[in-house]
Length: 260
Ligand SMILES: O=C(O)[C@H](O)[C@@H](O)[C@H](O)[C@H](O)COP(=O)(O)O
Image 1 (tube, rainbow, N blue to C red):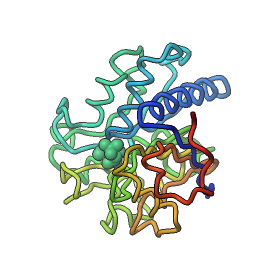
Image 2: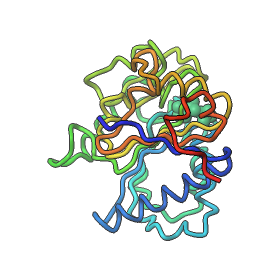
Image 3: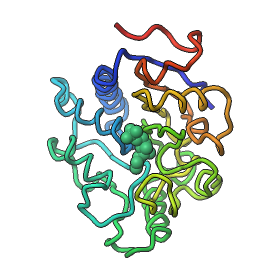
């Protein structure tokens, strides 16, 4: 378990730009070291804001987009192409603007896909896809992600792991269906904490006043069932990327001065 590190930026816009620059460097370094990179994307405003910032970055094409494996931390269980799906929003923000290898873009199943409207079957199918991509050197039935990003919800949820609901309590399966999520839509598919913790690095994105309480709760020793973000950590590094508004409730000693 890696102790959370915090970086605080002046505002939401700067946080998105700085996180995008950090992501470019992370991917370029992974590709230089291992020939390819594996990244798990998140949905939500902060996650999509980061992707949009990356799309407009002058350094964007330092990444070899053909050697990048993309996975998702969660997905709204809706028909393919639905504007509310995380993959739809990621395509609009970035993915349709770069030359990815389609076989390396692993979207979670849609509700009109091979599993029909069965979110639990869709989750099992995605777990099988992850297991098939895992190698002997990996930690369990998921590939070792270089980076897994998570937007933090105002209630401290990450991915579709909501406080007290069954999915955050899962200790064996890597992907589960979610029913009755408090954040619409109610039916989702999500990685579980064991899958999240297989990542080398986990970045948690929290920008905006509405995330201040969640950051304070998650970083003050709360349990992962009550505060799922508290249970999201990487094997080598856990990094919270915040803006000053989201960090406003944190003890000043917990984080360095906000960037200029
Ligand atoms: O499917 C989703 O809704 C996201 O994956 C979810 O986990 C999101 O990251 C958080 O709810 C934060 O969302 P915002 O950045 O929009 O606050």
